[in-house]
Length: 401
Image (cartoon, rainbow, N blue to C red):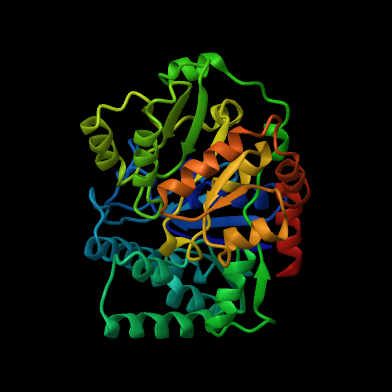
């Protein structure tokens, strides 16, 4: 089968959507399918095009058995509401040429990964012109996030954006997304039951089994391995609301056995660094994003995994880091009960410790609860083995569509 995967984020990005899109394309190629990808140069999560790639010219190369076409785009160094929209629109414009260049190739399946919905019109048009099945896979509800986090404002703009999104959602043959809460939100936006498919993110669970704590890795990151490590690893942006972690660290400053380790990059990192420096915090350590090969050891070296989100983002996005965290257990999640994360915790009691978002008091209580656990959370580990296995998920998804 000829499969076109279309999306702004792709391998070799190590976090977020790019990681999963890269793994999906590689897996499909390994199954014998002919796979092409229309994407951008890697830039996430540090919002800077990586060395060896260009932000202003097209490129085409073979990567892990996949033909990857990278398209120019504008990458703002400091994302704001306006330049985020320009960023997404620039990729939509340049990638439209690459997408329609596939007319002669005639794909059998066109999969658009959202974000960005800006690319939906050309994805639908390409599928209709070639007779391909069209699939919209939603990793983030970018319109909900833009307004839920007040990145974009205005009643008129909001009504237009949601109306356009609703029309585009219904234009695809299939709409998939990564959680039960996000499926419900798609239905509320007018997607029919026949269109909807559940396609969660996955974990390579075998890589995270029986991995020991790595004292040398912690020392390399600037952490005393004898301390209890409260780890946040991933994108450091606006959706997470990590100011709450800095405030909790200040309240727990006298607990010298605890250290907060924040690993990652993103648009919000400089501000958090300034907050911590101004308070002379010695119990907060910042470290750069680590190689994927080191991820099992990093996660195994934490006593508590922080899955932090602002209230406005709780159902618009689902943290991609969660799958691997569940594979090792001991997660602390900030979310309201009715959100996707909250529903996950209620449907699988004991899978994680759930606390109110944007509350320092709740965060500290949750940390104490997780640290009181004397063994890995087997409820989470068993769930990951049963429901998050990469081969099972991708095989089922391809069969269902």
